[in-house]
Image 1 (cartoon, rainbow, N blue to C red):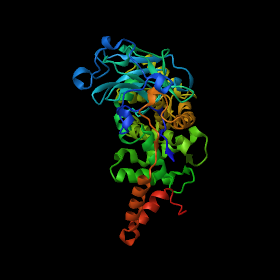
Image 2: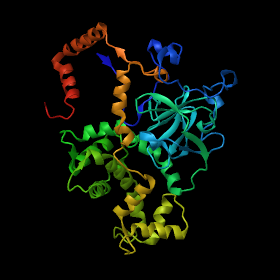
Image 3: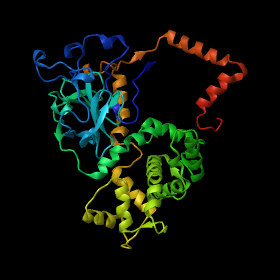
Image 4: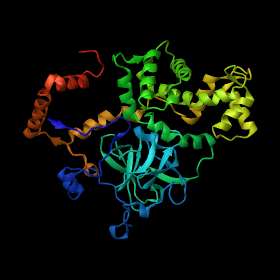
Length: 415
């Protein structure tokens, strides 16, 4: 049986830069040899191209030499999600990187030879689009074309996609959000893979939803073991985060997997803001007036003019009472920091399976996908697997079998 390339949630499989497969080290086939689309080129004759840099000595961090934000435009179809502005976000490896202001996307360098638009800062193995690095400070200055997966599951150049430099946002909420990105990454909120793992650990019985008691036990264990900081385990903030998630989703008593990402975001922000709220709620009435609201923004490092503060306050004080509740305050901050909270999936993610199957059926794909080879299984692979299984079964006291069963029966229903 053939083993197709794995596509993880959050973007299509990106042709890999390096591979242990022999063909990955062979010269790139021409169109006449393989057919399909050509690999990405820099757009200039080879003699005129600048050498591609391979290390930190030739690159600056923090958004390139100019410290500019980036803007992508012109992408159509299922990956149009990449059309947005990207703020400089320091470095990823030895290269600058940028994170979207509004969408779950980022621009970064693989560390080898490509600029990539992906869902997470990783090795670039799965992405929405990529461009060959020609040595420029950032992809907006590169002369090549972006390569994106078309409707046939083939990676092809799209000259319509443009990346350009733009001004860095002066929105204070955007700036504060990026200072907290590392914290969110550590607790796993920003990672699809970690969220999936957390959901499997939380939904032990496999019924597809969780109640408050399960969430409290789950968060308590993470805080107890030091995986999460203790402030995320505040019982009052945790219950409020759970109730607010139910209110947003329209469910009565349980949170399902679709709303798990929103729950995690609420847990983070409600926990983060709980101590601040206690400090500024001088009347201890569990509400904030305009003055206390201004203090809260100030403690978060958000500086706004008085007129802007009044406008923001009125946007959440829907009934005009002159007060906002703790839950409303937390939800307001969360939505201003995370403009598009969701379960982490996009239309692009939902369409990836068909493209993956086309790539698998076509063998190695076109010239741009030579790093994603479909490998046939050989008898030696089955022999090695059989040897491993026998070694596990031979462990005393059925320890190996019990370990395998626990991995297989991940939802704990004993079947």
